[in-house]
Structure formats: C-alpha cells, structure tokens
Image 1 (cartoon, rainbow, N blue to C red):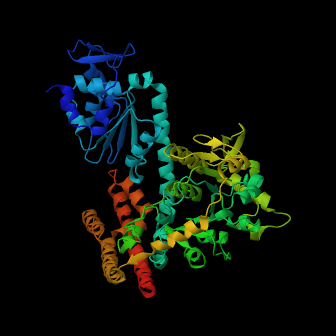
Image 2 (cartoon, rainbow, N blue to C red; image 1 turned 135 degrees about the vertical axis):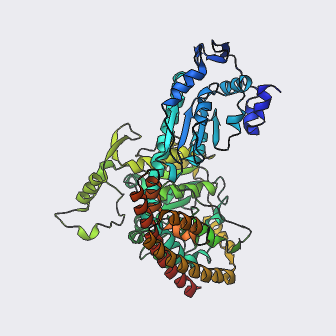
Image 3 (cartoon, rainbow, N blue to C red; image 1 turned 45 degrees about the vertical axis):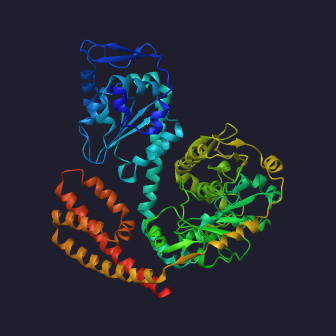
Length: 591
C-alpha cells in the first residue's frame, strides 16, 4: 500500500473528501543530500535541501522539555519532520495541535511520508485548511482553563513566511482565546462558589419553570432587537416604540427600568448575574407581560420576585446538569441546551436570539466602550446613587470609575478613538467570532460603539423600516413556552440529596484529618477518591481558585510549597463541604 492510502486510514472522512480535488501544481518535490525528500512551495524550499531531519532537530531543540498539561500548537506542517521530533517530547498529559493552511501541502506530505504515527496519535489534533471560525472553535476545545498558562506556539519558519497573514491571524486567535479563558477563570475563581450556591437556592424555581429551550426555533425568520444599556441608546431609544409587536424585543436586565420609564415594554428581559448588586435592575418591577430568561446562577430574589413567565437558562454548570438528571422531560424535550456566554448578559441575549432563529438580529445600545466617558445610557440604576451630591455628581463618579477600570482605546464605527476596557474588547471579539457562525443577518444599529466586523451597520430607524414591517403575535408565541413545564422525579431527588449530605459530612471529617497528617502521598490518594464521588461536582465548584494555584505549584519540585498548597486545598474542601450540607438541608425543606 502506498503512503497516501496508508495515511488516509488515519484521518477524518470529512478531511479525506476535501483532499480529492486539490491541485498541487504550486508544489514540487526534490531529493536532498541526506536521501530524503524536501519540497518547494511557490518556488521556495520548505525544508533544508541538505538534511531536513537535522534541521528539524535543531529547530525543535529550542522547545526544551514540555511541562505537564502543556499544549503545543505547531504552525505549518510541511513534510512533518519537525512534528515527528516534537512527538518524541510529548508526555502523557501534553496535547499537540498541528495547523496547516495549505491543503495541498498536507496532501503532498501524505503522499511522500509515512505519517501514521502522527495521524493516529491520541494526543495529536489536526486543523488543515480551516478558516478563522473553525480554528477558533477547535482551539477553544484544547485551550482549557487548566491549560491557559501552558500554551506553546511553535512556528515552522518557512511555512509562516509563505503564508504570513494566515498564521499571524492564527496567533491572534490563540491570544484572543487565552484572554477569554483568563476572564472565565477569573470569574470562576471569584464567583464559582456563589454560582453553585445560587443554583441550589434556585432549585425549586429550576424544577418548576420551563427551560429557555422552549423558545428555540419559535421566532424563525422574524426580526429580533437586542437592547443593551450603552450610552448610545440615548440616540435612538424612542425608535423602539415603532418596533413593538413587529420585532422580538430582548432587553438586558440593566436597561429594563429606563425602558419602562419611557413606556417601552420589552418582550423578554435577560438576567445572568449572580451578585446581589444586580438585583437593583429589576427590584420593585411588577410586570406580568414580560418574560424573564434567567440563568440558574442568578441572585435568588430575581427569580422569587418576578411576576411574569420565567424561563430557565444555563451555561452547562455541573450542578445544573445534576439537577436536570432528575427531570424526566420538559414537554416533548428530553434535555436542555445551554446558552453560550461570552462573559456578558448581552452575549447571552444574542445566543438566545440566534437559537430562537430570529433573522435579522439587531443590536442597539451595544457600545462596548465609554463614549463621552459614560458607562450607561440615561436612567440605568446606579449602585453609586447613594453617594451623589452636588459636589460629587454621578457623571463625575462615572468618569472616575472608568479611569479606575484601566482604560484602553479602540476605534469606533466612525473611525474615532474611544475609551474602553480589555474585558469589553473580549466581548467584542466573542461577538465577532460568533456572528461568523450565525446564519442570519446581524445588524449593528447602535449608532456608535466598536462592534464593526461581521455586522451590517445601519441606523435603527432604517433597520425598523426595512425589517420590521409585519405585525407578529409575540405574546402568543411566548405563552406557548408554558407547555414545557418540567416533570421531575421528586422522590429520587430527595433520596439522593439525603445521601449527598451524608457523603459530604464524611468528606468534611476526612479533610480535617488530612490537614493534620500533612502527607503528600495521602493527599494524592484522597484527591483521587473524592474526585470519583457524586458530591465531587459540588466541591470543585467552590475551590476553582485553589485548584488552579495548586496546578501551577505541582509543576515545581518545591515540596514545602506543594504541601502548603495541598493543605490549602483540603481546608477549602472542608469549608465547602460544610456550606453545601447546609444548602442541601435548606433545599430539602423547600421540596
């Protein structure tokens, strides 16, 4: 069997089909002094014409030894000489990702080289000829929270020189993912315990209200307008009155009160913040014709005091998955689909509109910046309001808050520099990447801000005139979601909660003993034991920060630091075990 057909056995069928009609006219194969092949691409050598293996060894020697859980991303495959050298360095927990822009280079490599050890390796991934969004999605799967500080990019110099723009863009994608994951890790570290505590407190709401999935596909090819609270909303907010009952109006919770004050009633309000401070945005509002789409992590009073229809959303939290395992069905749905989150409530609202199959999806108030040194549009409730005086106005405090955030600058849709924040740039990049995957039209009708790529720029009045022409029975469509009330196995849920409480009590006692023992070997054994228990999902949710710090410590050889890190870990386990026991007892009382 020739190399090509032998190698084909180890690649994905979809990739195999893409190779069928690829032209390789711009590539030529040449012999070398070492008696092995090299090749030219557009007349330029991709490997040494003397000894490609020796050249590869020299290049790869710069990598040094690989750390535990390290991800190596190779830019440029060529004939794979350098990849085979990197493969010899892989440890069991390493991941190797090979990105090759040119399908023809991959095809020729398959023809002249036996690559089966690369193609069949369980820790090797291939990204061949993919465009931006494909690269982004694939790399998000491997640059996980426990690996964000363990990413090594290996550039094959001739490959990255020939396709400079492509590989520069790949580096930008990698950096974007790392920034996003650092933001996610920061949120997990700061709020992980609050999230799971809120989910447990919200359990009665979760099992008694329909899932947000009940809206999926329900607004197919109908316009939706996502209303955010950026300063530019003041320019066109009154136009929204013309879109009522002609577009699905989805507001983020931040802007609900200003909209109601102006006589604008959104159809849906989205909330996904776990903090008590976020309750200010919906506190005191009594409306029954607005649907609340709230994440299971939301501050409990948001659920308890809302009068209208409540739909449960989730971004796949382990505790939420546990709760859903007791739900037999939601109407004719057997399970729920998490909404994607790019870090802000507006990103969740966008994914809701997308999964409802709305088209077009129109953004307003989506500045992602601070034009005029303002954070929000007028009327948004401020947590600073109690400090306002004639000597310390809200405008003065907003300007000071922006400066304290650490201002960076970006170019807005008018070509002007505006102040923004690194987190807002991450949200912008998330929108940009996700809109590339969105079938429907996305329109930025903010009339300001920095969201420019992947969207059509229009003023809101024109967007409404063009796309919001027909009347829609939005309230009728929303009421249909009530057909998806969960059917729950309460008896099994109660029984298992009681067992979890007993199990957590045992973990609490064992962790106390482990802290006194101060034995690394016993620590490792106990961690392995706890990780296999049903209650592990509750414990890890509350100690993400400790786990991340311990992960970094355990790369080193400092025994004292590792011991100190493990003691800190079991102190955290002890504390979380107590807290979850108390919460589960409260849940039992409510059930």
